[in-house]
Image (cartoon, rainbow, N blue to C red):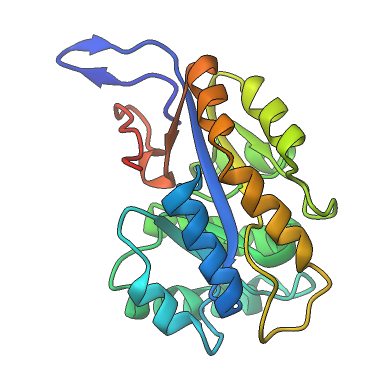
Length: 243
């Protein structure tokens, strides 16, 4: 994990790095539009994409290269390891074909990989591909790292609380970031135009919070730097996201 790095033979100081990840890219055109706005005008540096939707191909081809994009795998949390691995490898292959690049990292829709058998599949595929995996708690983090899989030091976000990020909640979280690498999971977007979901207007609340200029001022005051999962590598000096 990037807590320290080496450059020109010297050790860098411990830093605060923040990946702001927008889930559900490719789910709906209006959600996609909001995610890209949150990247262009706000603090979103990263997204994770569903690939088996009618909108994934166009979105993955059009998304700017400044946006780090990982795979948001849609899996059955009750699947056994074998079935989960087959589905994950299929979706990973489709991501590569559509994006023309490796994903920056792996996570799953509704945290399906929190289930032990699915996590086993994620660990195997991630280790083989050299990809980080989202860790939502200390237990998952320890399990992944014990198998040699990269994971951030901290995770912020609550998919059950809608919206998770109001202006006040986001600014408070940004002001109190810990040292190391943190992923902040968010769900920005506009109200969906095609998919049926109860999570619609709340996405616009999160979009406004992520685009609030005060967020960058708070980050600067905290000493934290924005990055993507592409920077989550051991013994590599971090490169701030250029947005």
